[in-house]
Image 1 (cartoon, helix red, strand yellow):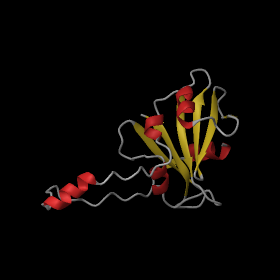
Image 2 (image 1 turned 90 degrees about the vertical axis):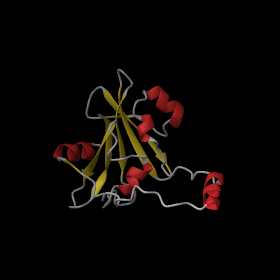
Image 3 (image 1 turned 135 degrees about the vertical axis):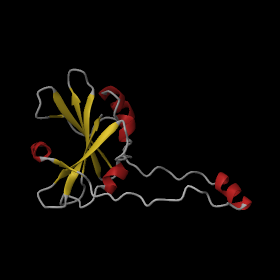
Image 4 (image 1 turned 60 degrees about the vertical axis):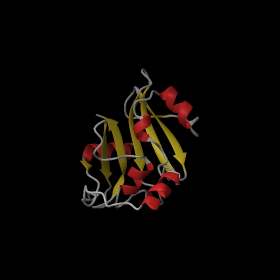
Length: 159
């Protein structure tokens, strides 16, 4: 975590995520059979691992009810009043920092998975956390790695 704090102090950089291509606002006519079929098909399952936007306003006790018990012990953070709790789901970690006095969450960190623990793009981390860069309720910051153009993960905080 000292590496994370050092990188956070060194500066936050934006993920290299291109904006989506512009689409026309005029809807193409849909044949009646396609419209009926679309209503009958079940929605696709969610592709995220952690619903970070839904977890942001929750206190630690609520998070524990939703995510279950953490697999390990909570670890001290740089601050005296903060601890970190790590969850793991399908190879993706989620590190939650919370205040020990209020038990309120302070931040969520999605580290880059894999042997190098770095990534060239944050797209898969945003997808794993169900995150959008333009959401008005939270802020997403990417943490730069030592190698130029790579990241160690993303940090999410309330605005």
